[in-house]
Length: 457
Image 1 (cartoon, rainbow, N blue to C red):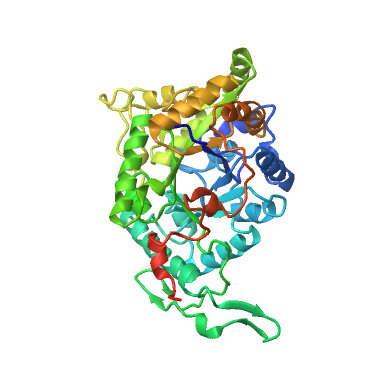
Image 2 (tube, rainbow, N blue to C red):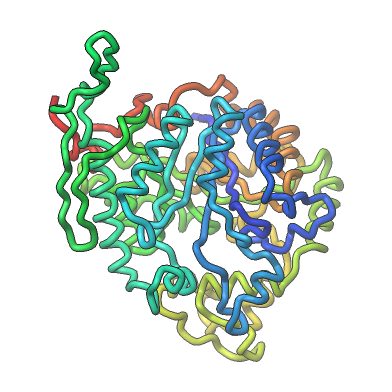
């Protein structure tokens, strides 16, 4: 049975977005103006008018400084830089949209749960419940050094800290204010019942928080929890917490297998794994004809530069390709990056610097590269086929050209998707969670891990 898919856009509050950082040089791109609000208002309004579900912001807290041992190439290519704070963008965009959902990436390694919970509650109020949080533990050494550390915490420590961070945040969001605390009684001169607002008195390994939460309960209380970790520990964390999984590029079989493990982990926590949604990263080039799509692809390819990709690869993996001859085998990635190292397609011979350069030399289509090129019918058919094969619920579209990619998708691909029943054209309404949740609830389901922190009635 065909079901409508979810569609969002992956963005960063940067000039160069990870995955294709040099494409801001495309003549039609306006990303050099991404530090101005009109750029984002145009994108958000186009998405909302087109019926898309979610504007999702990735984020980093340091510059990519592995390539050639410094940050100069990252700044040259504006690779995930300048890195503005996306929470400010979302706060502004809530005032010019009514239905569009927003996803915010924020790190549990370099923030404090009390201050973070306050910001998220505030934003969930202002957006009337349209907020999601992508929980990350961060992976850049430069970010660790920006927060007073000489090196990153071990991956297991980062996830331990993340688990405790979530415990504190859930306790503040779900448990500090009871459902009947706020009464807003002007006559009785009582906004909220003090006996129904409690301290949380958390005293753990990483955090000590007294409470109470300083915000009244927001429409969702806890924002929708997104997660993108694909390591074994990341999948454990996702099974415990995630409501939506963000899947990077990869084969349909690998995606389906990874999601099955996450859903199995969720069942171990007493959750319904089938309710976890999965969104796959995808770049889409759609033209009115095959020739039109090919023309757009060739224009993108001419503004796709290998050096920018190698700067990104070095930051992602900890391997500085500039230090290797093309025939040299790459050494083990630095601590915290090993799971990100690309492997040869044949899976057998050792990976060389030449292999990496060949892989990133072109903007290549295919499942593993996350790129679809074609007419509206071809794009819609492939999105439907891949969703079924991979067991996913939708896509986060990365823009090779801003704003052209989303403009083309809304104008050309959406009608073809609607014809196939793959795009929900009903008016969007309610909180983000109510639109994602099978039961249409604003709040975390009772079987969710975070719900155990709720006060009793």
